[in-house]
Amino acid sequence: MARPVGAAILTIVGGLFILLGGLLFAVVGAVAAILGLVSGIFLLGLVVGVATLVVGALMLALPVGHSVLGALAIVCALLGIPVALGGLLFGFLFTIVGGVLAIQWRPVRDAVITVEGRVIPPAAP
Image (cartoon, rainbow, N blue to C red; front, side, top):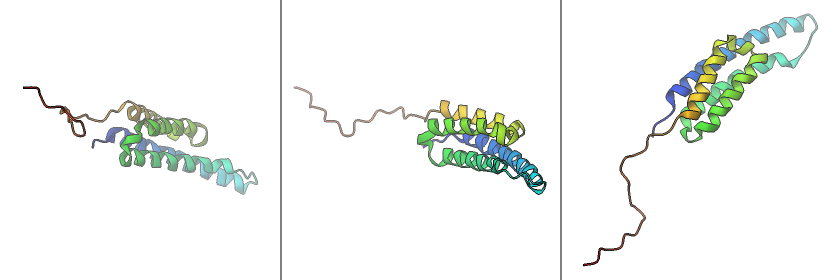
């Protein structure tokens, strides 16, 4: 069975950039926590980055759900803008393109039409 490999690779690469942006955002949060400004929003970038990586891996593992996973990749890319600096813009772009490719992907169909399970009446003499 064919798989949306290009979409998954782009989503995984975008997820790595979003994870990197989330890591930078978490470091800023750690510095802010040292100064006394405690907030959990700085960790959301890491969560969105990991979620994007999981969606990309699931595109390879479950090609049947390519439409839903593509939509989830686009949502993760949009969520990564405020909480992970958009994955330094590259993560946002890669994940958006990967999500659109996953939605547009269609599995290869066999050219042979099988009649298994159908009863074909015999021809009249």
